[in-house]
Image 1 (cartoon, rainbow, N blue to C red):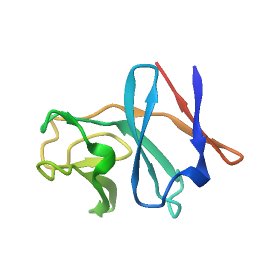
Image 2: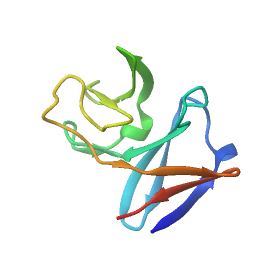
Image 3: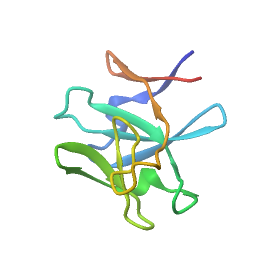
Amino acid sequence: MWNKICDVADLTPYQGRGALVGEAQLALFYLPETEQAVYAIDNWDPIGEAFVLSRGIVGDIGGRDCVASPLYKQHFDLTSGECIEDPDVSVKTWLVEIRGEEVWVMSA
């Protein structure tokens, strides 16, 4: 089921924003210069064991858009959810669509 989360104007480029979809906490990232533009991953940092990824720093490692956890600085790929430093660790990614000026996320 698709859920309207916010308007694109509610997001600040290259900064995370937390959102709730049902009981799931998501981290949204707006990267306007990329093809996808808005990415959604779980806000839960499985290494630091806290809901903090939306507060991480967005960057690029080897051509992969990612967010660095504010706790232990591991990087999570915004497309795949994979931890770049430890590929055995990952977070869930969510399908995102921009419809006009609205951001929609697919829930499970």
